Image 1: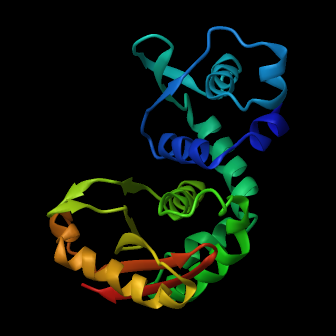
Image 2 (image 1 turned 90 degrees about the vertical axis):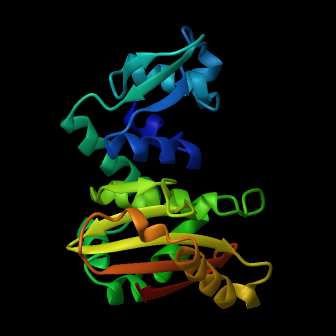
Amino acid sequence: MITLVKSALTAERIYQISAAINGESFLATVNKKIDGEQLATLQNEGAYYSLLVQTGYLTFDESELDDNYMLKIPNTELKKAWQSYILDKLYLTNLHKIIDMFNSSENLEYMLPELMYDKLSFFDFKQETHEVIYHVYIAGLLAAAGIPFKSNRESGRGRYDIFTNQNGINYIFEFKKATTAENIEESSSEAIAQIRDKNYAADIENNDPTYLVGIGFHLKESQVKIDQL
């Protein structure tokens, strides 16, 4: 059962489960009935979440229209299990290494590109070449490490991609797709400029140092630039 659940994790499902690990509920289709063919592959979203609800890995938070429901992780024990599943599926690295990576801007700048290059092959870059891949990756990384984060929140004159605070440091992430591999550095600079221009740090409520993390990318190639606000 555990192997089946882990093997059926897609990028979208990892993003949704990551939000649930982060204490949020998410909207999903839950089929009332699933047949053997659906159970064998779990490619159908409704079948996947139906199985998770029936087995207790997720529970209903509130009902919506038709077969759509707000789902959440029912308890701390299962939250830890989901963290382990995502860590094993997507990152295959030591949990302490992830936490250490966010303990300083210097660590993040040199450790994150290496980790992304090694592990991003999970995604199909022939079909998905936009920012959502990197967004899902960082959200999953933070969720697996148990680091609280905010995603796609309004602040200043727009929406930042991801915000987190770890070890007394604020990080604001912005992802920017490059047209070619040669333009990655330019895209990472544009990402940082966007954070500044749109004042994404406007809603930060603490006095901790704030770092702007611009990730320029083209397929699996990426560059991380970090500036202090």
